Amino acid sequence: MIIKKFRANTETEAIMLAKTDLGKDAIVMNIKTIKPKGIFSIFRKTLVEVTAAIDEVGVNEKKQENRAESRVSTQINAQIDEKLHPERRQESDESKEAKELEEKLNNLAMLLEQQIESQKNDTVKKKTESSEKREANNAEKMDIKQDLNEGDKAEEVKSRNSLKDKSVDLIVDQLCNNEVNYKYAKQIMEEITSAGSIRTLDDMLACVYQKIILKLGQTKTIALEKGNKKPKIAFFMGPTGVGKTTTIAKLSSKLLLEEKMKIAIFTSDTYRIAAVEQIKTYANILSIPVEVIYEPKDMEKALDKYKEYHYILIDTAGRSHKNKEQFKDLKVLYDTLKKYSVSTYLVLSATTKYNDLKKISSLYGDISDYSLIFTKLDETDAVGNILNIKLDTGMPLSYVSYGQNVPDDMEVMNPQIIAKQVLGGGGGYGSGR
Image 1 (cartoon, rainbow, N blue to C red):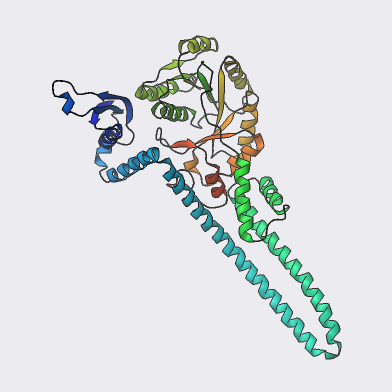
Image 2 (image 1 turned 180 degrees about the vertical axis):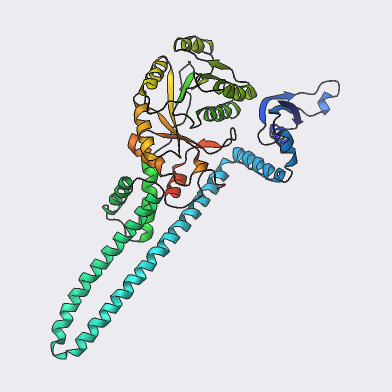
């Protein structure tokens, strides 16, 4: 590991120096104020000293990436600006989201307008043919005209209903192409069309977008509870290979660096090869203590040892949804936490098949209620399963993960991004949006 100290007039400048020298993966270990000493101290400025660290592996490769320096600087400046002026980021995001949604609406509207034009041409053609027939029989002109007027009205109503059905079918197909379950896609469209407030195609698309956001609901993140002096427990469970350990490392980094909280990590994953070493590697970089839980009886001792900490994050061994015996052991471990405030998280991969996700979420529901974390969003363009599992379980959404960078590639799930992506808007997580 490489550890360096950087001094500057402000904390922000010192962090920028560390990121520039060590790279964006550098971890800030300590920040302290250096007051001048000596007889001339009144003429000297107070400095801020930042101690930063990074793994020695890959450092030489980082130094060769000179072209990336300007981009990293830009990102750091953007992050700093965001902290100082969060309202600018909100305005920018809202503007960008509005622009993307408007572009999506225009694209779908253009396609549907082409269908309208085709429908109108057919109607004009039929009217022309009817007019020629009327002229061929002047004797019955008035009767035929009356019949045709009634027929035109019926045909217009039929045409309008046909266009509405085509619009609904087009949007349902779009949702299903992004792996939204057909049942839920139809349900969304039925709820919108039954309201009777749809007048234009833009109205329909905007209503679908808003309906999906409402169904995704508000996200639920980890937070301390007022008046509770005991540590907040975050219990992570899920199948093998979904990225629980990496997710814990990312969340630990955010709580430590952004909120300045005292954190400890427990792991009961003694089955997987090198699992303990992996979590210890992350913890050592962050100077976070790690406790290995071999049996449920070890939990109480470990919890008492860290009773003065703010958060304790518990990693568990991955369980196959086909092996119900393993779930009994997990339930026993979870029951040792009854005296504490526990937030339980079910970690799922966005690349897992829907049928498997249904079985997994059902089995873990027998252990506890949970919030949903979806990983590997950078490995798929279809995120309809997020909406499917949310509606299947009724459990709140929490975080999303979309890469291996700690702690950067993780954030609170944004329902607006998911809604745009299932409508084919693109610009999803991990796509450089």
